[in-house]
Amino acid sequence: MNIVVVGAGRIGSHAIELTTREQEHDVIIIEKAPETAETVSEKYDCLMINGDATSREVLTEASVPEADALISTTDDDSVNLTVMMLGRELGASSLVSAVQDPGHLSLFRELGVNVIQNPQRLTAQYLVHSIQRPSIRDFMRLGEGAEIFEIPITVNAPVGDKTLQEANEGGLIPDETIVVAIDRDGELLIPEGDTVIKRGDLVTVFSREGATSQVVTPFTGE
Image (cartoon, rainbow, N blue to C red; front, side, top):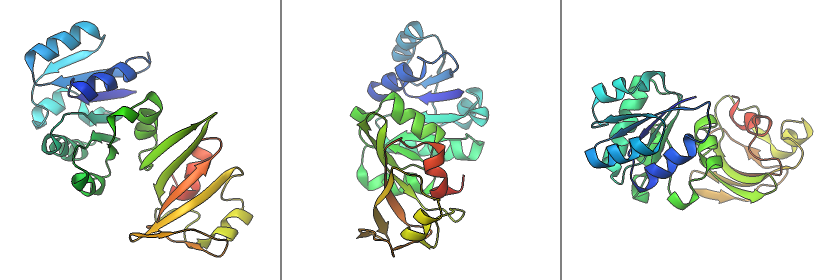
């Protein structure tokens, strides 16, 4: 997997540590500060580019158009947003970004960015979900493989426009998987059997086996 990490500061260093653990990951880092770039390049076995990631040329040099994931980790939301916009334009497969101000979340999510709101929750599992399952908005690991996560119902979702009972009886929702809540246009719903799951809903899902493809696909169609 080809991963580009922007920023080698507090959050970035942790992201670099996590992504370089796996031998199958090819990691490229972009860091603007020369001293930080030199220190990090000596510590990790990956390509370091000392440059400004808000430059299309620098992102292209870092092979962002071929990247499986672009992760922006700076402390400046305007920098992160610019990187994400350019990454989307250049064709990075998955976009992940730190967001400092909660008021900026909608700007990132409109671009299809999986956001890191809480750096303390930046774990290997979080990055795997953010990169491989970008449709998942947020998730929490509950131990022994169980997870609870938020996911938007897409236009192609098999469960779309079906009641919860129909989705369960039709085998669309796997066993040990529960739709806990539905956010519909800002209104929180506690679903019952006759509750219709609508496209555009943001559903909170509990799964004892975690956010596997089998669990996620009914909600996304992907």
